[in-house]
Length: 160
Ligand code: SME
Image 1: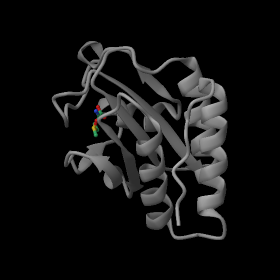
Image 2: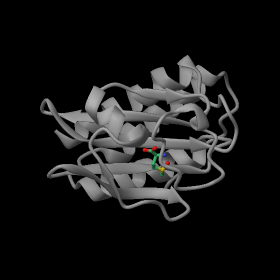
Image 3: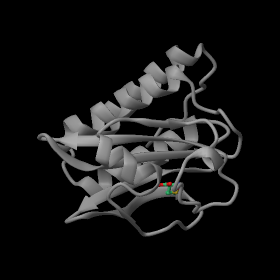
Image 4: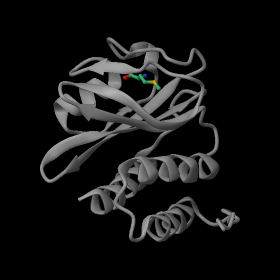
């Protein structure tokens, strides 16, 4: 049974704990739906001030909605469109302090004010993205980016 932890250390220590939880949770599993479903649930119960946590998976030539926690969202996102499509195009994390200032941002949940999208690369190919939205501006700092990239690295390891 999943054990709910008390995340009350420093931000870095709490992230290190959740990375360990993720690695343990995914141990021995190769099914991508199961991996992404549990990863989104783990992250959602860990992060505060977020309203959407989930994944889009690259299929043929577009992103398709994958496992997530939050309100129903847009299903398909083309290459280079929105924050997610830009993360795929650039193959780099997009950390957006104010989504209203990001050209082409796709508003799925009207509450979202800031967003971070981390691309998942498996065997040198884009597998999809992790997308986290917050109802406050400037929610994600360098520490969030560093650890959410490590979080994605663990998922990539289990998917490869
Ligand atoms: N805002 C994203 C779309 C996905 S939702 O936030 C869940 C984007 O601009 O790509």
